[in-house]
Length: 415
Ligand code: HGY
Ligand code: MN
Ligand code: MN
Image (cartoon, rainbow, N blue to C red):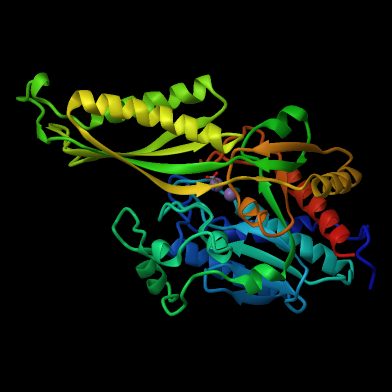
């Protein structure tokens, strides 16, 4: 047995990475190439079964908690554990790497330490956090936020998906109905440090020519639902002066989101809209838009949302349309501990010869946990920066560099 210090003999198993990656790749992939691994769907259950198989293959002890999070323990679960992993669910039509790269890399990094005969000085676990994307029920980072007591379980259970299925019903259909979600101080209390590896959702590492980076911060971000209620009518016989078209103020909201993003430091996006009844030859009676807004500081997010809401309300008033705006999800973001990220950056640089430190506008479970435990993130270079799309990609060489960096980080933490 060698000590974990540096674990020079622990190197990524490229063939092992290929096997793990290729066994997960087909799960939940649509014919379009995009992924529909939505929480508690058959695709998500397929990912959960894959996690169980990986835990078994690496001799890790499986623990599935009441919030749907999966843990694979190397040794006995215990306090001050080094936990690494990410999520396996995707946005609708998402890419293959956002989430899964962190979970696959975590299993491979643990396998490399095991193969090198490392005896970890503290418990180690690989984690799959449930429903990180909120792609079905609209609440981001739900598994980790329920564990941390950040989301009311009854509020979450009552959330419905676009087909009107509640989270409660979806969990029951998945065989989880007998387990009530909610705060889990025991499991949260076991975490000594959480390290999440994730594909970069941007191009900073590509521009800097660096394969692996360390996160400095996750921006605050939230989701708002804008409901416009007008008056349905015939598209071919209703004079403009007689219209109360809800899609018109919705269009103003879309333009205001772009304006807020183009003129401030926030990012504001409306990527999901619905018009009812959705008939080509009818003026919609109601329409809904979902706004995603993010910025380096919370007040920047609120300012951007305010600009969108003001524009939408003014346009709705002119059109005689009623508007309600509701905040659906809020994540406060996180600043990762400077001393921790500097220590990990030194480890990564020592292993790979170079490193960068960078913030992200993308939300992560690591940002949720940062309020309770020391957390850090490693980013793997994404040549195009594209994410939340089937074109999302990282090269195999960079994925293995990410595993290599994670091995060195885990080895340094497991002393
Ligand atoms: O939405 C996000 O930023 C993350 O991908 N859940
Ligand atoms: Mn994502
Ligand atoms: Mn993610």
